Image (cartoon, rainbow, N blue to C red; front, side, top):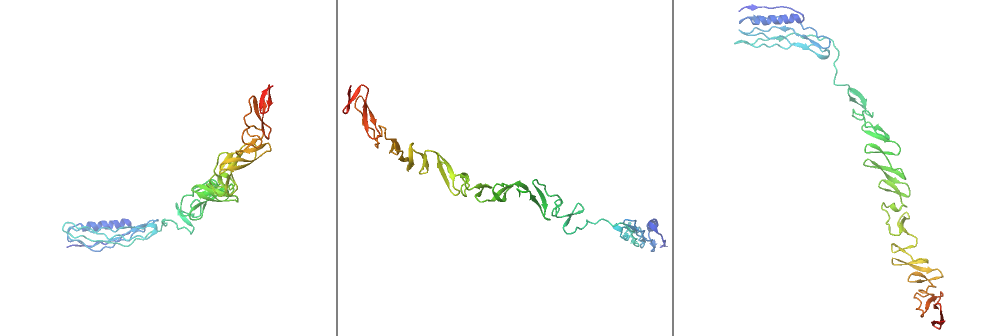
Amino acid sequence: MREVTASAVVEGPTGSLALLFAVLLLASCGAGVVITNGTGGGGVAGATGGGGGVAGATGGDGGDAGGTGGGGGGIAGAMGGDSGVAGATGGGGGGAGGQAGTATGGSTGTGGSGDGGMDGGPGCATGNHLCLGSCVPNNSVASCGSSCSPCPGTTNGATTCDGTSCGLSCNVGYQACGGACVVCPTANATTFTCSGTTCVASGCATGYHVCSGACVSNMAPATCGASCTSCPAIANSVANCDGLNCGITCNTNHRLCAGTCAPCPPDTLTFSCSGTQCLAASCDPSRHICSGQCVSKSSVATCGTSCSPCPAPPSNATATCNGTSCGFACNSGYVACGSACCTA
């Protein structure tokens, strides 16, 4: 068996690659060749910005016949200016019937100086959070809470942020309801609340109460007292309210009798009710009451204080009444003859 000694000292990437090539060439020259340890050169320092040096390789022991020498050292690479990593231990595959040779990586290259790389993002101070690579305030309407989107805009007010969530500050007469500033029913209202997206009254001034979100009068027949229902209407009347209860005012010549406005007889001074009927209670001096009506005392149908008609007159005569009693008057060409009318 022949012994071949390869000894070389080389520097730089070109020298290291040449040494590796020589080792591989000798290992392929046949069985029984023994390769003694040579000395590889040191790796070259990485370039600025982080490249590692090329590791020097040390030749391995010779393989048997057909063996192939080990591979070269790995190339060191470092990011952000770290030192180069030592070349990987080379390992060769054996040939037919041979045993694989080995190679050991050489010395570690020295990394060059370089700029620091970018990390995952800057840390933000308390009260701020990261949006698109920048720290933005939590209490800004443009980046409220942990959001990177602005709060929605509004009319009749201004958008606000409390550091956690968006809000609204509405103008006078408006209330934030359903994410918008909406107009409130200000007439006679003292406090307000929301019903969905509508602002409604929740409290009213004295003499008013809430109906359908608005303040309405206690005196109005449509909202009498504390009610939100209209007072009942009846024929021949107008509904009214005293601030507590409903009532009605009957039309002229009508009187409220048993819940209805009944027509009253004419020429009547005062009235009274009999069930749902309006009757005369008193009459002027020229009249008297008959069947609830004021009737004339001088009428032959109700003469004097009577409610019965005067008796039928004699032939050739007409009945009369002087306001007290009945009589008769003879027709033309006739004269009274006792209780009859005779030819003149």
